[in-house]
Image 1 (cartoon, one colour):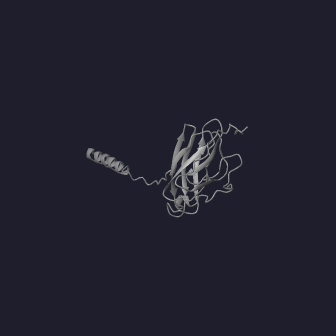
Image 2: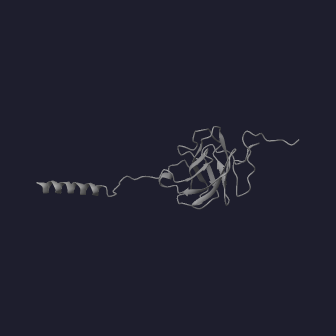
Image 3: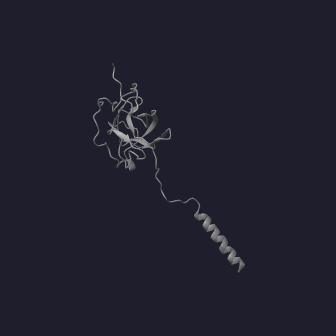
Length: 191
């Protein structure tokens, strides 16, 4: 009788051990395929990426810029402009103001479009009002699989001309950007 109980116990241990042998059938998708950055513990860029053509790195006419921008400060912050290293231009989807503690760019809403770039990653610099520029190597994703259903172009894109008294909404190439002034500082006029 002892032998039967011992055999049953050992069989149960062996079966239990085999069931935990790494046969995990759940498939997970990464929650974050894009670039990330933190700026002074108040501004966060999360999951920033471009969606291009049907092949990764294809130089389609426009690539769509996605990402989530978070302002954990106590005052609103504006995304003034975005530049692309090595040429190309960025057209923001509109005035992007980041209110405190309210993420911008959620629900797969595009931040803007990028033209004239190619490759699997693109060096980009984000300029915010009253903050240091943020540089990222932004990955380019092919418009297939989970990226195929993303909004292809932001609606209501503003024209690519500067607004009077404000910074340009698009910058091309690697020309030096104009100095950034804090939002609360009015421009001075010569006397």
